[in-house]
Length: 158
Image (cartoon, rainbow, N blue to C red; front, side, top):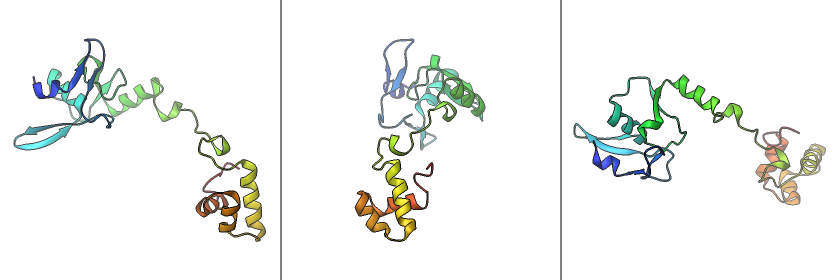
């Protein structure tokens, strides 16, 4: 067993997740070790699997039954293909297929304009009486936002 590795894993109890403690800002983390005189970086959950179960066959992933990317508990890890991992993600509601639609327009948390204002901006610009800069000043947004509204790169749903 690699003591240097396991001392960086937070083992609270046998059944729970064993979290990798290094690099808390990274989703999975990285374990650096020296093999044949060269440093290599490996995901901690993959290294934990290898420490307990041996080599990972080519083309297989080390997947988490607990859905915790930082978990290194071998009881929570299983081998599967990319397809197996994707199916697991869909079945557990973690894939893009079952995520709620993002909010559009004024329902979005960072929206500065309303649907009526966007329609007005497009009408005023189409009428030819206003420049993008003038509209930006009038509506309290940047000229680039006005450009995106006019070209329908933004607010395309209306």
